[in-house]
Length: 166
Image 1 (cartoon, rainbow, N blue to C red):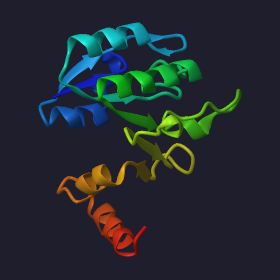
Image 2: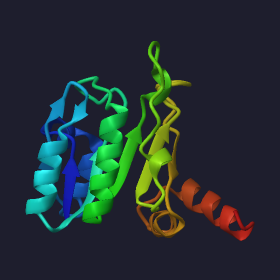
Image 3: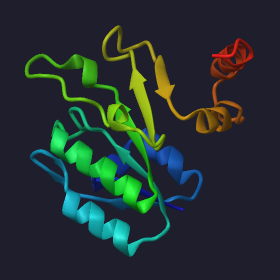
Image 4: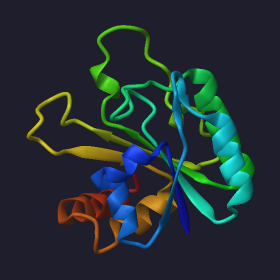
């Protein structure tokens, strides 16, 4: 399995290193002033048929601080649909915007159930509080939350939600 990331620097993050524990091959795409290089992403998707997931931080990408334009978000989503790749949209900084207008998330464009959206409260409430959330298609959420790698509190909460029919 190959994992497509925005650029090489993001390989150093803990989230991406978690994929390494599953022996994922990590491939990078350059960041431009308005976000990920669409041309390079498409070329990589064409030449590597085993890419299963695109990991992206569209708002205030770390370490560049670049925010992906709406046009590029739409293009990323369309490429993911065309090549059968899921998107992991990581948005830990989206609520920390001090100027400019909010840009719709890639998840908000998702009509196919191919985007997993991850957010965090740690940048908004307190840096010491490591509380986040995941919005994902039910099948994917169940697989992850029932795995032994998921924290115990997540496994307990998700089981309670499923029992209530949520």
